[in-house]
Image (cartoon, rainbow, N blue to C red; front, side, top):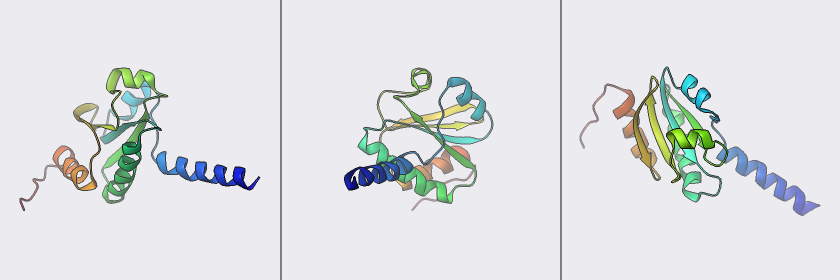
Length: 130
């Protein structure tokens, strides 16, 4: 019984870490939600270890962001979205402004890179050269 309770606890903790952002499930929902504003959409799979790291990086990024909303797409559950907007390679992200896909990226991005991308795609500021 203790093992079962422990396993359940681990599953709950893992699920809350992996699924911290709202999920998009259909093309109609995707298009409706992303038509006005700034968005990062993260395509992931539950079996993907780099996706877990990307989730952590996006959570860190979201603490500093006010004008960008992050959504998730599970490629195993949202096949319709995967076929229209995604890739079977994960993690993958889309940068979307007012319904227009500005850029896509496949692979893990560090927080520093994500912050640069937010400035690049969602503000009119230029990055200071260091």
